[in-house]
Image: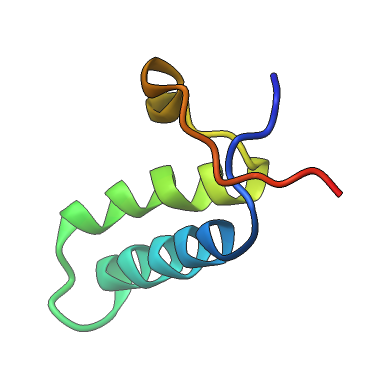
Length: 62
């Protein structure tokens, strides 16, 4: 599994995931907040399966 999520994209996914999951516990307390697991996990792992069909990558090798 090659990384295809990097840099700023990765941090945006992690922050967005945490914010969405927080909606389950605080604020409007909606169950849709669990969808935040997807960007959180793709940000942590550095791989997004949705990028594969488009051969898209934001990961830059150093």
